[in-house]
Image (tube, rainbow, N blue to C red; front, side, top):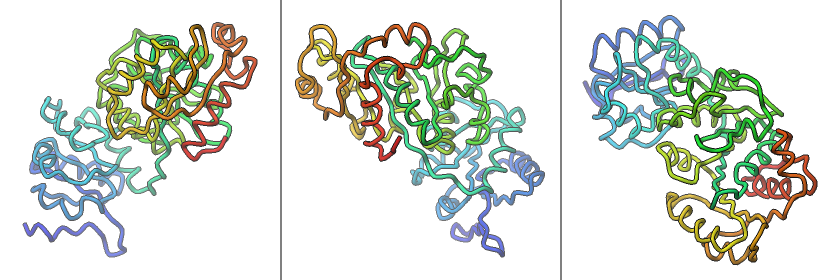
Length: 358
């Protein structure tokens, strides 16, 4: 095949889905599914033939048989990449999918419905990517999760918001926001499902104007890198803002989450111990991260500027002691209902830094 001859556009100038596989059975199955939803597919057997049309395709499907070879090409990162595999994917295929930045590994025939959804959505205009902000505590009891909930609630007054809990041993964002309903969409189910932006939005529970991704009432499960990638990619295409509650101790999915953040907010009590712990937390983040600090007053208080100097990140906001906050959280009430405006002011400062307005 002439590696420059792949033509993705039809006579009307519409781009097609690009399929890369030398597995004839897999190619036939994908074509059959695509034909059922009237989506055109252009298939190539040699990954090198995809170098030119890689960015032009509405959706890229990389066969598990050539995922490793494709990742070795070091093609530019793009959205709308799935790895499709005949049967259960091997560890090598999963690693290659992560290298490619694939949103999901679709195992056929069991994941037939996921492929159908991806093909249908490929023909729709890609929505603009929403902003992503992550909150992480410098030390236990910093209030990062509380500020994450407050920011999500304030942002929900003007845009669509997803609040994503990545900390399996935290108190849980469902409890902090006061949601006590039953969720059929939590990390124990999302780890085995691939949802597009629209389907994810419709599946997640809604409370106080915020869509929730958490651990539900089930025992906490490890959030895999692949699950985090799929959920965060779908959230980015469906919500104006995605708010992440990031665990202080790095877990498998933490780097995947931080890499997608437009801003990381470290929340630290105004104490010497928290400043030292915060320095270690910031040192564990990818160097490219945009990091700011929010301090919270408490016992053994030192000046916010001293905390920022120790952690070596700019100070964004300060939250003074807020009367009634602990009682509001214990009762499952909105933390913004507590007396004082400290949380709302800090949340607004975060949104302003993201160029979002409440």
